[in-house]
Structure formats: structure tokens, C-alpha cells
Length: 201
Image 1 (cartoon, rainbow, N blue to C red):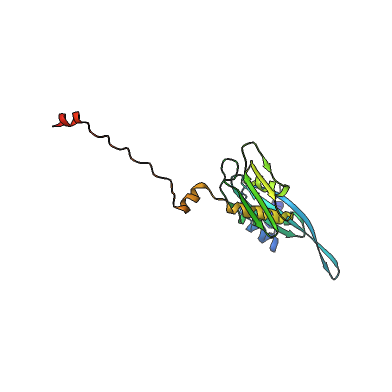
Image 2 (cartoon, rainbow, N blue to C red):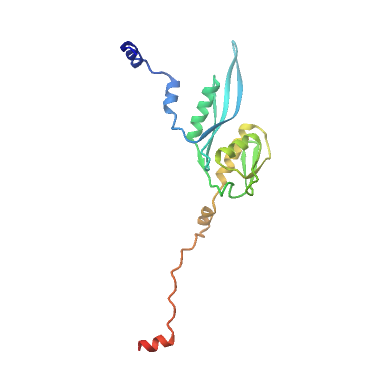
């Protein structure tokens, strides 16, 4: 490689504008990213229609930490990148018992409601497409789930996220109720027998 080529590569200008700021602000990658839904939107303006894209993305580490977000842009890849960045910034953590959830719960968001219940090992994820992807990203392998309201994919996923926020571990519930686990008691001293007392005298 010649000296002129090296000088040109060093003197390249960095990207400017919102796109460059967005790329710099992206946090370090954590977990797996899954695109749940991509929709094309249209805005009617004076000269015709202006098209855009909306992406629904879920990010999870497979160990009870998950985040969901929606990104909008003129390009699909940029919309997915926006949603991924926002989802990583707003990830939540919830308890997992084995490979299922600790207890039954219902999450609501808008007109959508999602009911979920723990399942025995080997049951698998019994849920719809969008909710299933959220369970898989969170690391849940055995669960029963049912949609009880709207079938809008965005509201369904956010309702599942609200259900995750309601999950509590057994230890956390015991602390709230004031029933902390009892500490191990010290071994009691054995009473002296009459023969040992006589020998001591």
C-alpha cells in the first residue's frame, strides 16, 4: 500500500448528522436480537405519499433479562437498529424457576391481555408467534400462554412484558410478608447425667 493511500484513509471525514450520533450512542451488544414484526407505513403529503418502516424488536440474554422496543425510519435496517438500541437501554430482569416462570399472571397493555402459567418440564412454549419469540429470548422453555384480547402484535408483546414485570420470586414474596427464612439454630448442649455429676463432685 502506497503512502498516498495511507494518507487518504487517515484523512477521511467521519460521518456527520443524526446517523453518526445514533451509531456512537449505541450501547455494547448484550444478548440476542430478534425482529418480531416489520410494517410499512405511509404518510400522505402534498406531493403524494411518503413511505417509512416500523420495526418491533426484542433483545434477550436467555437468562431472565429482556427488552422490547419499536423503531421507525425510512429504511428497514435503520428502523431495526433504532429499535435494538432502545430495547437494550430499557431491558428488565425477572425471576425464572428452572426453565419456566415462578407463578401464574396476566399482563395487560392497551386492549391486549396475555395470560401465562408455569408448565412441567418438556411441555415447551405454548404461545403465539410474537409472544413465543419473547419467551425464547428470555430463556423460558416451558410455559403455557394465551392471548385474551387484541391480536395487535405490538400490544401483545408489550402485554407480555408487563406480565414479566409482575413476576416475583418466592424469596422476594417472603421478605414482603415478613417471613424470612429462619436462620440455622445452634446445637443444644446435652443435659448432664446423674453419674457424671457424681464423678465431678
